[in-house]
Image 1: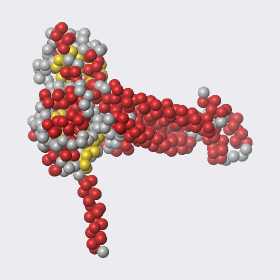
Image 2: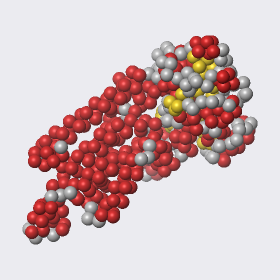
Image 3: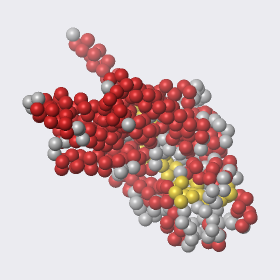
Image 4: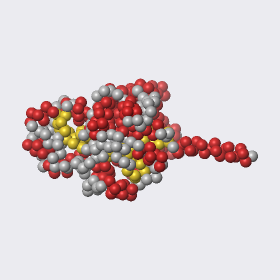
Length: 493
């Protein structure tokens, strides 16, 4: 008896021991972030960890909060960003001081990977030669040049506004997605943008890095971040990457992805085997888009269907409960409408401290966004019923509950159905943003394509999403024709 009890307990503990060694690797949603995340993932896999990838988690705030909340276990950050954009320090202190500040947040900074990927301003080599522009201070003499600055850099403490003040730059830049800025320079839509000095696109688009002659930018040393309670074996494994990547090597690795059409997994494995950090094996990680397409579609459908069902279950009964009370009805429409004013990516970021990252916060966000069309249509349908039909219901001697059940709701069904239909289409489009918090779906190839400035990859996610919306429209139209009488369908226009 005791022997079988011991066997049973050991059988339970073995899976738990294996689960304890599972590590979730995250990254920001830009080319270098994906690549460094893949390097870390393959190194940990080689060292015996079960690795789950949550790459491309959006901007700094999303990825950092995911680490703090325990949704990921490690990602690569930059010391300047950590000091000024995250910890809100006035400058970038010494490594030991920065470590102390990070520790107060429950974060441990591991040894630097070896390169400083600082911010810079870049301009086309042709324009730089034509106007003799080599450093940032030269831009003062060319106030008519167009600037396109990444949205994050526009608002950072170490970003555009203090940079412009330090150099006296007379520009009003427009915001642009970082990966799209290079193409905009190539198309001569803008003349200057911000860049990371290790970007592979700098060589690809023949850009010149302008010298920071006033030493405005701090160091941005790439460092893995973990929580202070991280597994010592995890820390030991990651310390093996220290000082293996200098600036030239990082730019070369980025260029292999951007210019040579190699996958992140291939480039990561080539680097790790070349540095004798792992032995060559079958490349793991990012599959080809066609292999992943069924998974993307299934994840996308799961997100949208579950969120839509939840919004129907909550929105329709709630609307029915308050439609006889004008003040409560107005308040309900006002509140659900207010949710629509919150930018979707901001709502997803706000969800992280409450629900973490992944499937659950994405479904909650989609649920909140789909409430308005369902609530508005349900209330409108019930409040605009034909007065004659209402009088008939009263004349038949029906109780208020019976009137609602046998007359009002059946007459309101077409417009309620129209609200559900609208919510479904909204959900399919909005669900592509769920990739920024690791929820998967068709947003994954879109986000990755943006980071690589790869239009084909963007379309690989966008076209199936559009087709899903069209198929959903046809499905709802078929259901409407099958179950809703023609004279009621006509009222929908």
